[in-house]
Length: 285
Image (cartoon, rainbow, N blue to C red; front, side, top):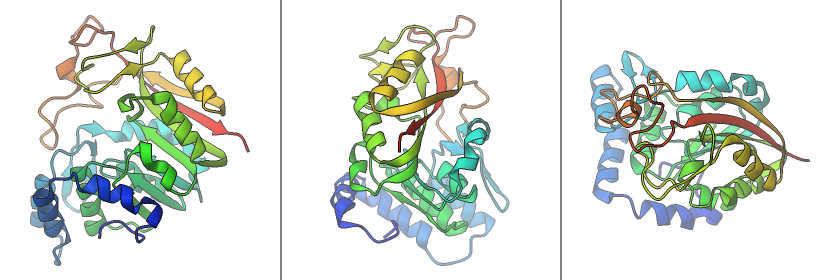
């Protein structure tokens, strides 16, 4: 199958539970197209990539193909730059890895091994496609969620970007990540924060469904401390700009601009525009 190395008994049942929910005809058809033997010329690259839309993270460039994804992740990569020296020869868990954009980048930056977890079938197929046309050794994607990571081996660094606000119990999720780190491990966490008061929600927020809580930065830091982390550094906090997240031909028709009111600093549902905050937290040895 498409996960490698072979399934460990500890998480095989979890993966089966998730993949059984995938639309079987859709993912099997795409998997067959992706893994069909033959050269990856431009015509095939474009044909396969178009069938794998929407692309959320990029840009992805291979040969003459450029996939201009919804997120221009080069900007987020630049914000991660101060942390990258610590990734060399480390094991990394990329939570909510999507199409593997950062999974691949972390390996190329010197990580020993990178595991991404991504429960959504279309993003997993995008990862597989990239591994077919431009394989990188030492990485994998597993169809799993943050709630199930306890079945995996502990790692040196956990990266969790754009995921925490989907968690029904974000404080418990941070505790799970703390438990999954080796002593002296690091958590690289990027999530939505409010510029002033924390927010509790029972309706979509800025077009994002299933968000229950958006903390302010002091509350987020308290959550991280409560989970057992120390030496918490706030590396960046700022609103997402429309040139970083926007609709493209390769993504959805609606993106960030569709859910912001121009000029008044609020979302279309009347809340203050959130920031995205990047934090590095350390687990004591």
